[in-house]
Length: 290
Image 1 (cartoon, rainbow, N blue to C red):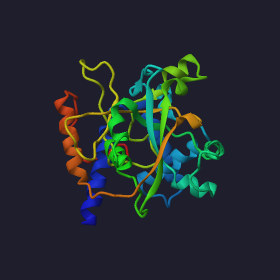
Image 2: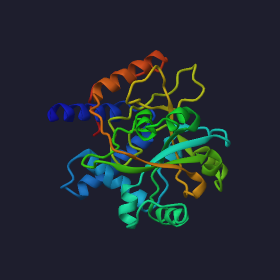
Image 3: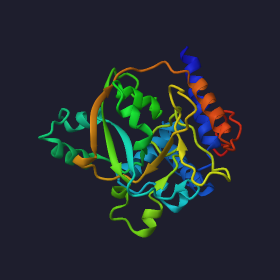
Image 4: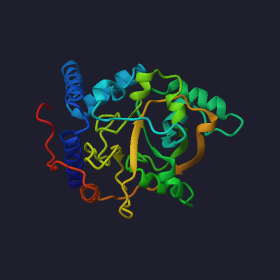
């Protein structure tokens, strides 16, 4: 059973890297060169994902701007949404509490908690969705798991952890754009790609460039429950410092489901095709240059 799961993971990641049409040739080449330098400098790092993580965390921990928000990522760049729109992001707090050595905050110490958390955060892109798309999920009795499944967060909770505390952040687009120059604003949002997180995610599927009928092509979430015929938008945006007014609610995620990864991805691809997205054929082969 484990061998089958490993095979599904390998195929999913191979497809994501090979078929991600939102990765420009320039960004893909920059990434490949960086990963190869990591592998050459550390022979013990044999896997592609391990080398990717080393390179990703190198610039993220140094708080350098992610390539996702530069002109290298033009194929995935999105126009900024209306500034009155709110974005939703779910954050795993287990590592935050562990690194800070403090429990979940109450109202009295929330500001201090957020200040300390901001102090240890890195510059990775923030994955998010639009608040209006998940309003009903946020109001559900079991909202942490409903939201996890709706947003395709199949890595929550991580392997080996029974339960993780989470917080939902509700962020105005205006806050993402605040203080940025005109070019920075134009590059502050993007469709997610396979290399925008520190680990490869098999529950992510790269969305291709839009068809002529699509005005804007956001990423599209892989719904872990396959509810209905809904392709919910997802995007990445520049990190910001969290404030009290961004905090929507605290909860915990503890139920890890036995998802059939390949069935989820097949259903998602079928739904994308039904919406006239032009998809390459999956095949599990990693890009030839790798």
